[in-house]
Image (cartoon, rainbow, N blue to C red; front, side):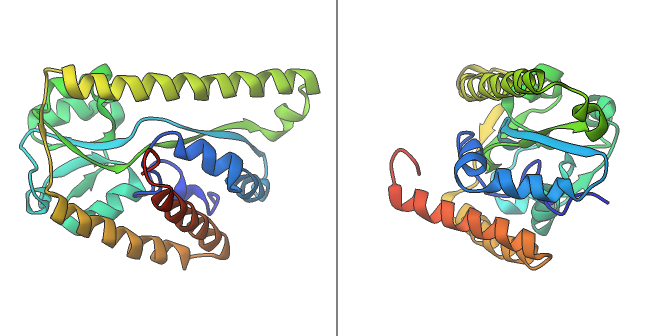
Length: 245
């Protein structure tokens, strides 16, 4: 069975606002220890590290300018965020990743809720979607590195450290690549028109996310511990104010 923290991997709605939030949560707020504990319970799997990728935006053929516009739109969507967004009528659809572009072209899909601007442009989805929703559902994807436990045990300590250092370097590379790329494509990208859901409506989505967090927290003691960390961190950052929130 998957680790019970798997629900927090990928995009957990509003768990972070900026990509830098994620490594801070892992390194300074205890998620490193919780993830290790969770994956240590699974035979053969060695969890090594987690880092931030791109934020989650919705890209569609038809515009989304209100929550009502989400209703009925079939999107290639990530599991946890897709489950959350389905309460507004968005329909997460699973197709092979390589088939997404054609599925949008043929009308099988109305768009994607899978990534940020950078990936949408890199893989061709920006060529078949006309609109990009600027309201993001999560500030960064939470992606992990894993190894086969028996294979990892055979690696000498100094080479383990070297590999972990290269992982850290890859985390740093993605921080810069996505942070700069997302802003540049939002401003200078010409392939999609930007739309936004009004602040008063989006505030309701953020409020609904609090209920969603509580639902997930109730699924296990460990999930409850993670959600409490997210709540504590979010509250602290709100109090810290600019530039944190």
